[in-house]
Each structure stands twice: as C-alpha cells, then as structure tokens.
Length: 164
Image (cartoon, rainbow, N blue to C red):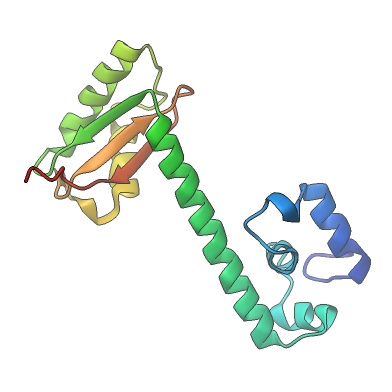
C-alpha cells in the first residue's frame, strides 16, 4: 500500500503476512483474504480486479463469499462459546427483558463468574444479539444467554425442548 485506497502488487502478500493469514487454518481462501484485506483499506473493486487480473464482477463475488464465510465463522465461534460457557441461562418466551440481568447476575454469582456489564448494557446486548427473539421489553422466542469464564456474554436463539 502506498496511500489510502491505492495498491501495489508486492504489498498484498506482505499485508496478509503481517495480519497472520494462514490458508491451511482459515475459512477463507487466499484470494478471499486478499480481496478482503484490500477492501478493508478502501481499495476499489475495479482496482483489485486490475491487480489480480480478473473482472470487477469476480472480485465482487469473491468479496461476497468471503464476507459470508467470515459471518459463518463468527456464528460458529459464538455457538461453541455458548455451548462451553460455564454459565448458561435459558430465557423463556414471555419473559420481561428487565428480568434478564438479575437472572444473569444470580447465575454468574453461583458460578463465580464476573460479567462486565451494567443492567442497562446487558439488556441492550441481549436485545441486540437476540434479533427478532426480543421485541421491545418482551422476549418473544426462547433464547440462551451464555457467559464465558472471561465474562463475555453470548446470546443465542434457542428452541423450546420437545416434550413429546
């Protein structure tokens, strides 16, 4: 990179090296990593296409696939953290969002886990991460709130257990 938004061929490999990209352990292909790295530095798709010897449409497709892969990886990590979290609280549909922080704090106290959020912050985090499972102050679909040993809060939409 010589300036913001400009590119030169030698710097792409160096950029990936500095970021620690390892194709053998990544959900991204090298090409996807190259495109994302350049796009994150405001390089235009047309300029990336010229650099990589391909079309702008192909760069757009590679970027879209890369972003999908990154989102899937984040989702997988969040799922794994929720499964292994020492604190897991199931919040049933119909629960008032204002009741969630006390339930989280009580469960964390029992497990000797510190959660680093105030009640308002925790409610916002739960509401934002639960998506359409929370509407206004009401939990309208069951969710699972997990807290890792380090205090990270993970919110997952869950399904009601099948009782048949």
